[in-house]
Length: 96
Image (cartoon, rainbow, N blue to C red):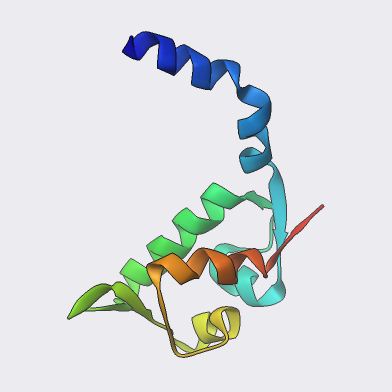
């Protein structure tokens, strides 16, 4: 049965293509992920790389991200939870 669910997700390629569509980052977000258009999943991945590289997770609460000067421009506040992060990233991505 697991094979069926895998083939179904592959068959639903049109639904997933929206997630793979390149989006243009704002200049604030581009300072972290680069200026080239990227799929949303790649943007999130690059932001996490940046967070980990710069030790921006709260050591006492790993779900909390403490923004540095670049991330604060994206988030609009000094800290966010990992669950809020995508909402803030979406405001800095536009269709091309």
